[in-house]
Length: 558
Image (tube, rainbow, N blue to C red):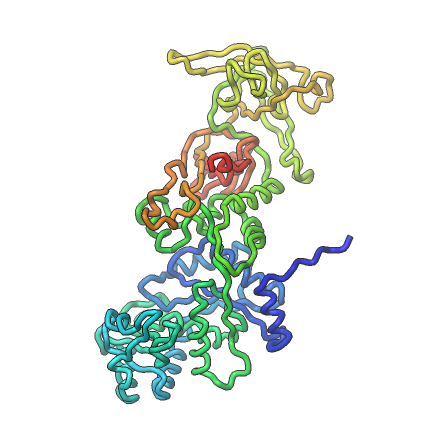
């Protein structure tokens, strides 16, 4: 059967066209340029997969470059977290770079531009500069400092660099066109003065380059062939190219900026500012809280690198922004864990089940498969005894014909064990069931091959042996917001849509094979969902995070 060839997305089509006209394969080079001012989220994961995926497709190097031009917001903690996330997703960068590596070169180029009459020092306030910018329908006004002499501009710019001027008193602006229809071309700011300590350069610099000035020039220095940005940078492309023309008119090949659409995820927010608010207000516990859309949060919740890469590949690259339903991300992790996660038994809302005709003190080990989707996963033994725990919702004293779980007078099978029949219940003073009494058929043992074992019953329940089960803290995570687009309503605060049930913590019981489970180990709790071991877990206090339910429980809600 012929292999189906996957069609190219529009980014790949651009590269293929450039290979025909401008570039050789050896000249292809990409980059992923995060700002280290927060933790990466699922949107960044798509960008990581795009750029590093192109590197794999074209056997081209990909740089990891930190756009560290704002010392007021950037920290080494974020740098370390970003590197961990990229590596965890399965990618390796060619070079680890920083925009701060190029501060001297950027400064030297700025001096040349001043000498060429292409940049000037403006001493107006930020309010005055904004007012003079004009509007999309009215032209801007020239700054009164636009025609400063080259000598005065050079002197002021050097004093700014040395910290000899008051912080914020001056900026360096490119001299372009205050009447341009693209407002970004109306003498954009190249440098602002900030007397702040930088996480890498310390206090060496008192001025810092703006994104538009540093970004394209960093691409140029690193010989990046294609610089992929999200759609909000479409209007920046003209300025990107203008700066490149000013620093080198002789280069045969210059980086090309091209844009793609953000893919927003439903039932969450991805603004770093809003994510920081969630942390600071205590709505979530940290950047890696399993409810957060951060890569570290998804990792802690139990998502796998392959599931996130599959998600990025499935949604693809587009030219129009839209909201991707989080159920697609959940589908990707279910599909992955269904293939690879060992099956275990855990009871989250336990009620005691007593097998009255099972011998007192008797125990036996029963064999059960680890993963029916993977024969190579083998089997394990689980202990069985007279007293078990089952889920409270798996029993009703009286039930209709559509209830296929345990009820009085009817039979069900205990997973990998025996067929049992409900006989009676014990209740407390408030009428709550505290014990269910049943009988079992000793000849109906699963896998024994006996006639009784082959008898068909309509329900199969999971269980744990009360004597052997391990108590565990179970954290049931759900979607953080109750609506698809919490920050789309301009009349309401996005925090108004916080889901009060995004985390429920309960105590359950799990089978003893999980005693030595390691942090991040993943399991399917049979009939319930997929869970992983939290980083706070210990042998004496097991903690499991619910990654996702077995089925999409939100479909009916929505």
